[in-house]
Image (cartoon, rainbow, N blue to C red; front, side):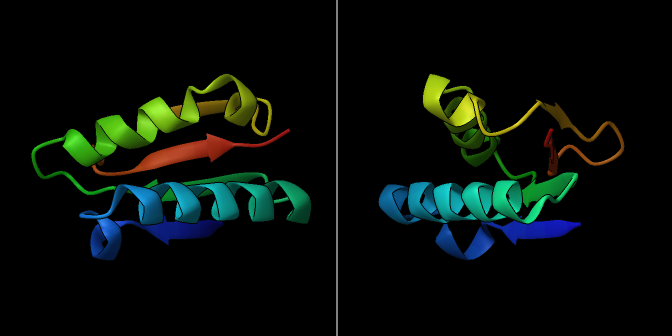
Length: 81
């Protein structure tokens, strides 16, 4: 399972979107079944930003589903086709 930790990027919106975009395209092309994105727990703002990014129509086409890890609220699992 591939993983993307967003803790070092949390202050720059452009870097966050670029990292997410590159990560999702790489996972989709590699045939990875599941990938994890780690926005961390914190105040929840970074997590909401990641979920909003994932819900964009053109990004939504890259993956089959997404879920928040029930055991770890600072982790998002993305399932690919």
